[in-house]
Length: 336
Image (cartoon, rainbow, N blue to C red; front, top):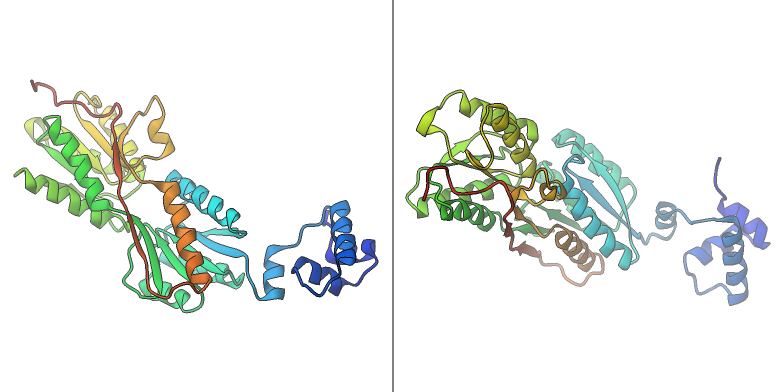
């Protein structure tokens, strides 16, 4: 059943539809008596003005578009919670869409978001072509989360992936591990920084790096570990794995246990992101924590600076991650 309309409010208050529109657009041209009558009628009917319709009518949008790369990854849920809190506090609403990590689908999802004429757009770890991001930034302010950019019209909010990866590897080395492999994130936007940090930490201790092709999914983590165990044995098996993200780590742990290896007694595993699943007692994953809600809050604040015309220069927010030690890491078996 359709909800009450602006025409219903006008009829209940005994005024014109145009006057109702003026009231909900905060026009100073409306007397307090008529404003009160319209608001009372709206309350009686349970009428709520449609944010997009209001934006189109007033040309002043209170909508922020959000493109989510992967709805299955709970990392993004925490970022969105931070986005929503900051947006609500500033009087804005979020409209979400996803492209399921497909450049073509993300481009289409972004077009749909822009059709709402948002005040600005937040792109969460998009796989979009840089040219598509630049084109969007020529229309509205754009901020990227978990992806870098050198474009002057685009702001970014990221964690320091190089530093985070080094934290993970240094932790494993401090426990006595020397054969440490990295499950790479492939084409994921954060993968290059984490791969670089891993290599730097291994080189700093004169240890050989072993990067295993993978992706930021549990399925890819399982596949990578199965492939590894199918080609090595004995002392060639790594005693520790640094996974590209938590979901990759979950898949790796599943494949290790399927092969009869114990985590962490036989192989220690470290993830990245500190998603809500990592803290579950049955998982208890050692992982690198990104300040996810803080990233969402900063993304909105950064975006609104552009929206309000407070600056034109790009901002590059880089937050420092921390290590959360739980139950999937311990010294290698046989160590003192």
